[in-house]
Length: 100
Image (cartoon, rainbow, N blue to C red; front, top):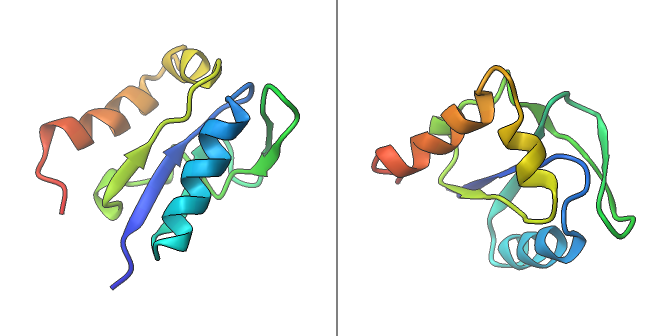
């Protein structure tokens, strides 16, 4: 069974902190999904890298993932600013539970 990695992301992410780990994970056989505010939304990195959100944070279930990747840049600042606290709740799952 393929292991799945959640990547939570917002605009102004550090491009190389997304592209290099994502590529390495996929080359190692992991499946990755980009999670953002809205599915199919285009996000743009600090240096122009463009990616499309696979699934919205409202629809993503942390228990469906084996690991979590949070690229740097200004993306984490935007994620922390989520007034509903969805990203914080999602992230806490990986620190408070035994993830397979």
